[in-house]
Length: 395
Image (tube, rainbow, N blue to C red; front, side, top):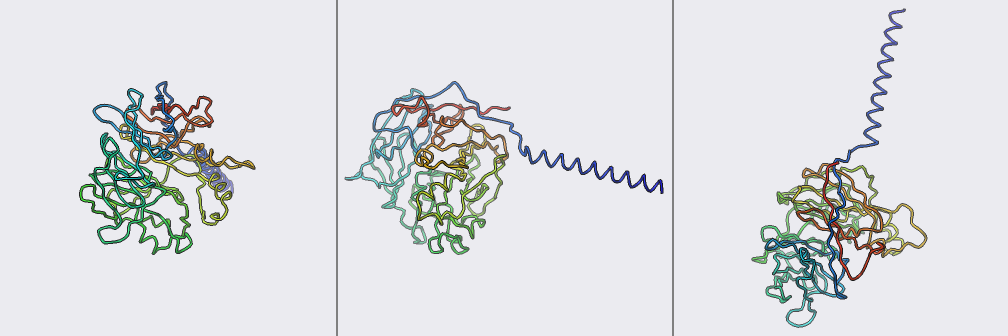
């Protein structure tokens, strides 16, 4: 009996030790899944540019570009129907022109833009569906209609996403289509999904329109896509990286034939929107719901350091009785997830509230510039546009 007792005791001790090791390792993984290896460090370097009364320091449509070793930032002011181009090196206005709504140079009232060069601006009109080429005086030098694709199918661009950085690749312009499922009460069916491309490709030389065969991810089938937003970026390998606001994941395609889904590596626990259609009849309820959910509102690829910055609209778990919807939506609280070139976690960077305007940022060889023009920032001024430089630093 004694040897058997000793054997059972040893087995029990081994089991207890194994169980304790398991708990320790499991607990460590739960407490700190990803260790922050990098961060975005605030620099003393900043850009401050004085702007006039018909310009703005809050725009959802901006573009950074270089020309002749000079850095520029183009800012679209929808309220004033104008585009201002600033010389970032001299910190002054370089050029500005208005979009005409009458006469031979008139444009659609709903548009996005992308600068092909410092002297050529491409404007995406919504109604009528026309691509406009403008010179540096804002004059139309070329038009390309995009009503139908090469198979005579009607093109339905997304009005909401027209301003979300149209992308030019190999002289082809990519714009977002409309993501809707009205005939099924907002629920994406398998039939809807087969007719829901993720992009529209317009050849800027020939005007030929091609709708890639790649469709919305199958993970969206059965979900309410009412109010679903999408954002994307292009990396150094000419691969497109997408995020659809109601799915916790990134979708990568290099051929527009298939997607590779990649989990978003972060220590933050997302609470994404779902079933938004149920709130469409009550505006206050719909806006309150949006504020209590997280959303990735932008993806920036840093080609100089080969990493990604995912900009997260951070939810407010407890709303007051009378939330300021306009301020909360225009100047969201948030943070940035840094991912490496393989979309692996590098760091989560939480920014102070009431300081930065997260919807205005751009990447340069020096680092990431983020707008300091938050309306509640004590130094805020409508007469200036200001950006603070953040540099990627190893911890």
